[in-house]
Length: 481
Image (tube, rainbow, N blue to C red):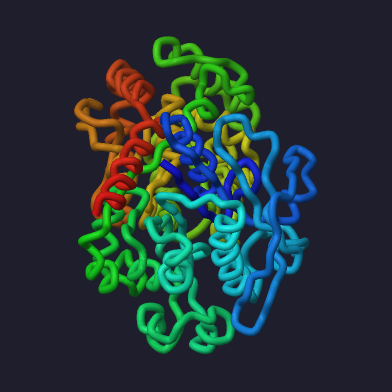
């Protein structure tokens, strides 16, 4: 099968969050399936163009028309990818040249990714790659199914399009004039993109694509409710017949405690007791906490943002530290109110709390490996990768049962049996504290039960093989309609 995957970011070339991780692993997993030919299209950002680790050759160029504009687009093919994925970058210095460190946040982001979406379709035609399926991701490529149907149907008469929602909070809004001024679409497509007099690119994608997917099964059901859908619940409900969820995997070759070069000691599911003890002691030294092997170390590696459930942790933190024997370690950056809270908490409890307000991938790996308990009380979580990373390293998750957290962390009982972690249903601090106490009680009073739970977490299959197989099932379903 010929598969084109379009996204605004993809590791290792450029990454700002979970989408980048998915775009590193999913194309590779699909390319490993015999008979597949996989192309990945990404913008040729300045940071990619200037990186000598990513040599390219130009294989085509053309002009792209956006409203009254015509802009150059080059197709740059990566020359050193060896896993079967063919990576093509869309080159345009005006849209993707040097704009500072961030890849998003410019005032013309709507125009930038409209250009990218249309240029990808032009590129496939110019290099004579006519895919059976196009899989596009989030609002930055939400215009692809609409352009495909409105302007490129004659060039791709048999191509089907899947649109995947990773985070519905960001929908690609623009004012009403954007439709004519930039998009240049036929007027009959105005209705599918119009929302309250403005253009909503995600709405257009949902209505014009052949299949809508989300990154976990529970999240696909949650999106039909106003609490989760950020205004698109009615649109999602109307497209329920073509909506499904596929829970993400993680890169098990990168995230493995047996070979991770960032760790001071290596271990697997059979040797984790001694290996995690060594990693825990080294981690406590590194972050300035007392080396206490019998005190549970609770951690979060996260963006410090409200929807990550940090308000719940702030609400219970002092009560937890006063009443329970534990240590707390936070790694991340984000909203100042949370950065300041955890700095102050660490100053108040210097022997119990460490706050590392930074971005450090090596330290993140050592935290996964050295911790006992991983906290993930997210208000909403489309899929989440951190809880799977934590379990891969033998760290027991305590999570809010929402989205992908509910799908990947079935609840265990007070003896640590029957599930993979501890969960709470209602989004409030007392329920979160209750789940934490159940986990801490298991750690303190039944260490064998806690170790059995760690072992069960470590032997789970969180690879991309199953999700890739599910994507293939859906691709075939689209093509056979």
